[in-house]
Amino acid sequence: MKLADNKATLSFSNGSPSVEMPVYQGNIGPDVIDIRKLYAQTGMFTYDPGFLSTASCQSGITYIDGDKGELLYRGYPIEQLATNVDYLDTCHLLLKGELPNATERVDFHKLVTNHTMVNEQMQFFLRGFRRDAHPMAVLTGLVGALSAFYHDSTDINNPEHREIAAIRLIAKMPTLVAMAYKYGVGQPFMYPQNDLSYSGNFLRMMFGTPCEEYKVNSVIERAMDRIFILHADHEQNASTSTVRLCGSSGTNPFAAIAAGVACLWGPAHGGANEACLNMLEDIQRQGGVSKVGQFMEQVKDKNSGVKLMGFGHRVYKNYDPRAKLMQETCNEVLEALGLENDPLFKLAKQLEKIALEDDYFVQRKLYPNVDFYSGIVQRAIGIPVNLFTGIFALARTVGWIAQLNEMIGDPEYKIGRPRQLFTGSVKRDVKPLDQR
Ligand code: ACO
Image (cartoon, rainbow, N blue to C red):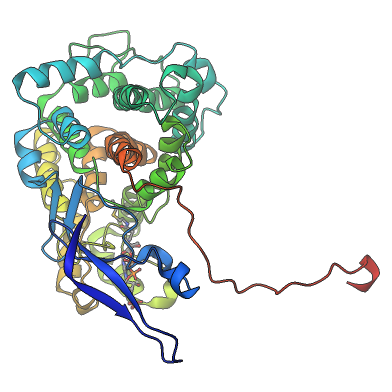
């Protein structure tokens, strides 16, 4: 960390001595005030629920400029990555800091490919779930259970264990997601086929059956790969912070990533694409485009509790750059599948148009996020709505593991232990039952 020339001074109106705090500069983005000694010096904590003004770590992986609508992985704009490299190249970049050269690329693709199979015993574990279990419930369990199957990569303090756990997680997530899906629909599990690309293999494990050869559609393969790239990492979001906090206790990588999967499930985070598609289907059922105006009135009414899902973002206060790329992919996929007149896509475009022109959204800087279009693409591909968040988890696994490994390698890393402002009862005595 680079010290800035200036310092911050905190003064108090009650005459307590003021405190000076160092300021650090990042390579881009806001500076941070180092408050680590604040408690020792003043006996006070800072208060910041939701981390609105708190940098929880230093990181060199992903950078977002929410006002510009810019997303960089290791310095590379998401637009360039989404058009020039594939998901496994992106994984190499996020994990190791650089895009692979030609030899590294072959080696890395081969390495991941060699780990796509899961321990055969995992399917018996999976069979313990109800067939109608939500795939995210199943995935939380399966990912956590990996630590029971791969004992040789559970020591978070061993760099070799961390490396192999990272590769295993990236390689096995598509297999697990596809297994969760096949189990729900009652079809046989498909083993990975390693001469296919990462996305092609995933599509085959999802939609292939042992009865006939599965031909990968190149437009869908590219779309899937783009969905993976766009969701690969996103700085210190809720699930990534969960993974870091969970991993900070020294727990094994599989357990920490399972915590990330659980966090991602929430509708304010990864569950938004599922919620968004359900919302579009609801409006469609009620009359489609003609009901958009009425729906928007509900969204703007604070008492209705209705939100326009797929809109708004904690960090992007300009267009989410991933949403633009996703809209492009949406057009490509719908055209390739002859679904250009898909009513949900039309409805989404209409909602977006109205929202972008409406004062409520303009004033609050609410724009479509990546989930606004990703649901339509996935639905067109044939992915069931309740698996959308599972696809997101698959893609984000590399981000989680890269951030976890970065944290463990950081000399300043400590177990995460936030403090609190206590507002409960002060000390009191337990009274006998007849006096309570
Ligand atoms: N629809 C309607 N109003 C909204 C929406 C929305 N989608 N999002 C925010 N607002 C309003 C809020 O009601 C609030 O209004 P107010 O100032 O009058 O009270 C204002 O905009 C600011 O919203 P906050 O909730 O304070 O913004 P925050 O940064 O905390 O929330 C969040 C961001 C959770 C993403 C929110 O915009 C939301 O719930 N969106 C819908 C869910 C969604 O799409 N999530 C996906 C996030 S991206 C991802 O995980 C990949």
